[in-house]
Amino acid sequence: MGDIIQLLPDSIANQIAAGEVVQRPASVVKELLENSIDAGAKHIKLIIKDAGKSQIQVIDDGKGMSVTDARMSFERHATSKLRISEDLFKIRTMGFRGEALASIAAVAQVELKTRTEDEELGTVIQVESSEVKKQEPESTAKGTSICVKNLFYNVPARRNFLKSNPVELKHITEEFQRIALANPAVAFSFYQNDLETSKVSSGKLSQRIVQLFGKNYQNQLVSTLEETPYVRVTGYIGKPEFARKTRGEQFFFVNNRFIKNAYLNHAVTQAYEGLLGENFYPFYVLFISLDPKHVDINVHPTKTEVKFDDDRLLYGVIASAVRQSLASFNVTPSLDFETDVNFELISKTRGEHTTKQESQYGQWKTLGVEKRNLEHWEKLYTQANREEEKQIEEAKRELDEGNVLKFESKANENRQSSGLKENKQAIQIHGRYLIRQVTSGMVMIDQRAAHERILYERYIERYQSEEGFSQSCMFPQRIELNPADMALVLDIKPEIRQLGFEFEVLGKNSLAINGVPAEIKANEKELFEGLIEQFKSNKNALELNSQENLAQSLAKRMAIRIGQYLQPEEAEGLFDQLFACSQPNYTPDGSPTFVVLSLEKIAALFK
Image (cartoon, rainbow, N blue to C red):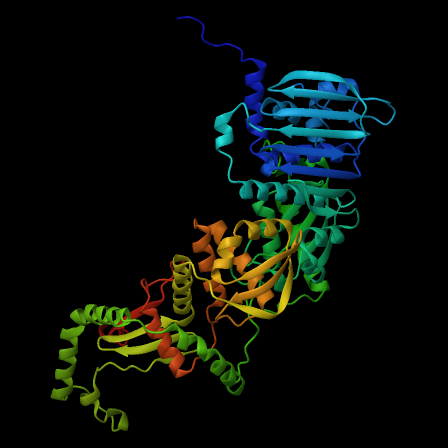
């Protein structure tokens, strides 16, 4: 048998190495931005075209590179960090040129321009598929500019695995936000297809948070500080009432490097115990500073997963820091997290809620009852009757024969004549459930779940009929969004408008809400923000297209809240419209809307 093992050419070896570091355009953005940070840049410009597939360019005003360093930065295993093996456990920088550049140049066309302060001329180098095509002196500004074009042009299979432009742009925006948060002293500007979408000036961390995520964060930030001989924890956490249903804005930085760590995340959520409702997540930006010898950052190629030599101690310090911050600022919850955050609190007094019920009754009138309503009810009754008829007859016989003990009360009058006939009147229990008697027993529905199903089918019908009815706002509402949410809104703009929302773009991250779906009476700003937040939550948990996701999100936000008492007409209308639905059994996310309690089941409760 002949020899079959052979050394790979450098070009192929570089492409294999690139697979570990360069997974998508966002990976390139991360590496290039970190290089600029380590170069001492005070201002960094990120330019993206076609979601990074066509072009990624990072321009900085750092210290630049010499001619030799510029050429060496594209060689495999070239680095400015390491001299001996022990240096692997003392890394404090992100990566000063080299390491990633060789991998990037293996799967893209790269042009580097750089000049140090003490040189009159800079250097330009062009590399394609790990091959240097050009290297010559050139007049250029101090600092470094790296332009990466046509990512994965020579690896078509890898390029085919890239997602749509909005998805790839979302990942790029997340990387930009992480690095901008970690370096508030550095100014950043972000351009997408020649349009500036984000610009942040140098300043404090609190200012950087507001610049990146919007003015809404001004009132929710709580500073955090905890220091021990082993570790120092600083940063900001969010007040409980600003918690959201998505984990998006949660950041840990270890020695200024972004990491993901479920164990430390649990430490933060434990500190909020009793302050957050189920499936709500707090905002936090926490910086952990400790000696590099206590942390191993080389666990994962992207260095987002790390190991600590004492996880438990770190867990305790973080939990303590968050608890002290919440206590020292007298932070207490002010929202009922069992309900959606879009609605104002409804008074619990009978006199106050009556007026609100009367004003809301219009929505029940407009729903209408279709012929299929009766068909669904008849199917429900027939199925239950088959199983219960025998037991009902036996119960009647026992009453006739006097085998049942009766008390002298008007409750027993005409018992046999009214018996088990269907009662159309619905009874509400604890502002949450509705009960109606049927021939075989009784039906109990969850009023919120039922309303969610009704609204969902109404919104889906709008998509199918391509008609979205809108009512104009008396005063247009201005909304400030973070770049990621703004990109999401623009991506699903047609679907949002088809529901009945009307809005226009005012600036790079702001909108004006001019109209909302016709039957909705709610704060336009809170409704729209809640819709986007619910959409993101569904997107993380469910595989839905944009139309189904939006219909489900709006239905969940607009469904009547738990604890809301209904007028008899509203309760009966809810029953009728639920069983007029094409699928009355479940909410859009699969929760049951009603249960049938047969006489047999009820009797079993008393045995």
